[in-house]
Image (cartoon, rainbow, N blue to C red; front, top):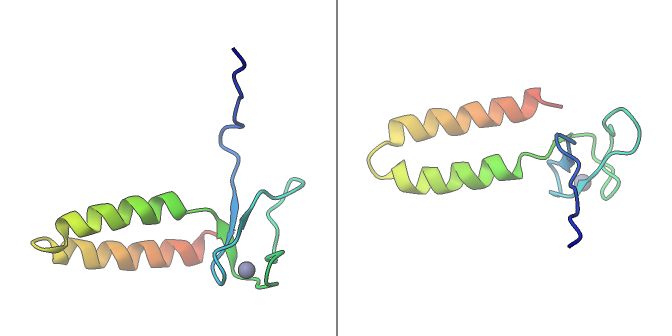
Length: 82
Ligand SMILES: [Zn+2]
């Protein structure tokens, strides 16, 4: 059996303009999106958004006062993590 080892803790870059994801080459993050050229790139937080979306749907009905600050928090984090 061949086990493919995924590189762990390898940050994937993501473009916040076109949602393009790629693995950066070299030691630093790419500062520009190779797809659209936008400079608003960060690490891939798609899984956080997906989990946040599921949790948000689950809690939105009765816990909107938690969900809305969490969305704002994630938005701020997405701007800081570049
Ligand atoms: Zn892009």
